[in-house]
Image 1 (cartoon, rainbow, N blue to C red):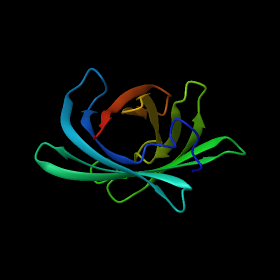
Image 2 (image 1 turned 180 degrees about the vertical axis):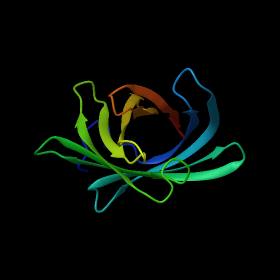
Image 3 (image 1 turned 90 degrees about the vertical axis):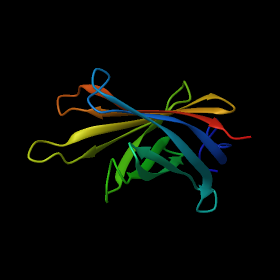
Length: 155
């Protein structure tokens, strides 16, 4: 596996909660259950996270593909979600911090204005718990929480 610990043993079934912050932490919050399957891909070169969730009564799906270049110490991700991203993949790059957090950033178009940023952070809370947070970043650099996912490994 190209990803170092603590991300090299996440394969399996996970379940938990997903909160979508529609206008940052001060705005409305939509909560739902989430189920996720995590598996290695491309001969253990990548880690693929495939998940399902609902916005109100509408079912949605997403996929997050993680990679890591050990030599250059660069973390990469491609993310797509049927509600958040529609038909586009968001390409991200970043690093794995000393605290073990997988942290990547990308940009998306927001016409007619400038592009906005998006940050995805994954953190192992324990051997059986995983936290994922996603942040919207304004063109001025202000960051607001957009998604918070708490997952527990199914046993």
